[in-house]
Length: 202
Image (cartoon, rainbow, N blue to C red; front, side):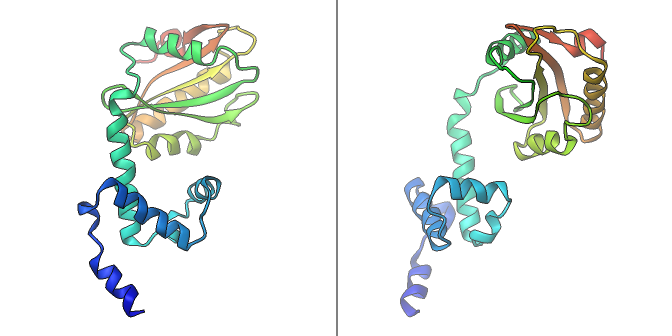
């Protein structure tokens, strides 16, 4: 007990730790809670239970590692300069999907892609796309801007009435939440269609 207290008192504060020391500190806290595999760790994050494992210092160390990782990788993030480049990027990325998927592409203030999260799969309509999942992806990535996109495996790029209603609903919600939905894109057969261009959202 005395040794443990002595060890705690000699540990560096998080801002003074090197990257290796931060990693060791986080690993030690995870090990103490028997979180021994990546699967265990991802399940922990999925269930939003990180605070049950890390103490205040552990959580600070974990957040510092995440921030440093994002910072070090910022220059590697793909920047999409205009809507045409966005459409081509997504049309290529989702060209071979056999089933309809709905994705939220989050972007930083420099319009670099931060994340690409699938929030629905199957026949996409207003009822199966969970608005909470859409904006959870936006908020968890601290994104000001985002794009929604889904594929039409048939290759038909014509937006359905459900596509239009869902786009309008998400666009209005984003405005209320002080975010900006840059576009809503349909892809198929290596081609794309901007719903914002089609529907003339202002």
